Amino acid sequence: MTLPDHTPERAEVHADAIKRLEDAMDDQQRTSDQDQSAVGPTDELRSGTRLAAANEQVSARRAWLDYVEQGD
Image (cartoon, rainbow, N blue to C red; front, top):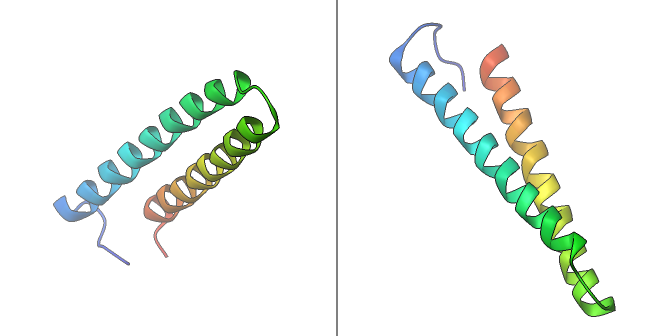
């Protein structure tokens, strides 16, 4: 996805990418807090799985923001 610099569309895409990254980081923090309070093997496994997914989401959102900021 290549948008010319300084277009309203590019600014929108950039703002959206920032918002999505911030939301993912908020979810990651909440999930991490929940992971810290997990008790028992089943609860810990579920919590760890959710935390891994949240970490992956942050990585994906950060990569998208980097791509939007750098262009091609």
